[in-house]
Length: 302
Image 1 (cartoon, helix red, strand yellow):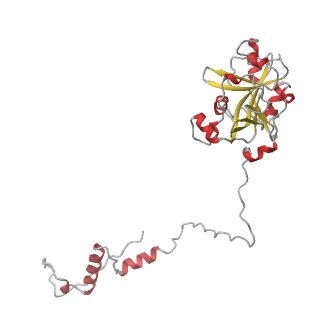
Image 2 (cartoon, helix red, strand yellow):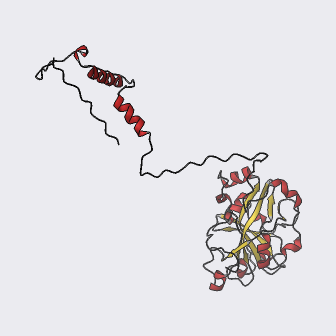
Image 3 (cartoon, helix red, strand yellow):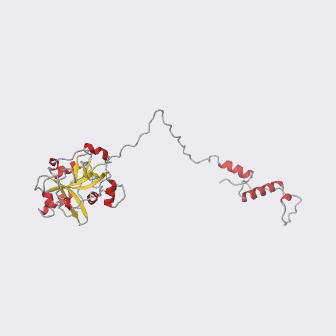
């Protein structure tokens, strides 16, 4: 800060040094009267005319020595004929519903292969029920003789659909709360399936939000197998439904992902160690619509 130099008032020989009475403005020296007028003006909110304050203000506008200043770059002018570049579609974002016309319902033969081969092939495909269309972004494979597969219990009233022919739905309730959609794989009697863990919304967002009781467009809407079943409005009555026939619940072909992440399956701590550590979980690389945990997923070979 700059110090403000005190104003010296010249002595007036007409005023005794011991005088204590108040003086009128006309009796004060000229400089004193000017200073008093400036003080009164400032008290009333008006500007003062003090030469010392004006010089201080002007001095404060000068650049201070010893302080580094960062030059402000002027904005670059657009070159003649340049056009506004629209943002590109984010990596891993689902396609628009208008592009679905080019994709057909998958055939029965598509599903009648080993679950470990079917699982990554389902990524990028579309689930459709009425106005709701979802793109599959994360799956898990469950094979015969797999200690984490429901087929390990044999054929029961609950697990019978998983032993049906590939291409049918297997829907069950987890802990009596979450409706889980599986796609039956392989030939009839094998007992294998692929769990749909996560999806991305393509159309029918309002219906999805209403069924999920959650007004959001973030991945939390569909990142998890129970959320997918709820968004599609499924119940166990959909078990054994053929996914390769038009109407109801169906699976359409879709674009093949550029890269696929792999990792161990989620929530199967009860299974044998080899099955717990098996890398049978698959997800589209770069997609935000993937459930937790994400840090166990990686590119193959890493």
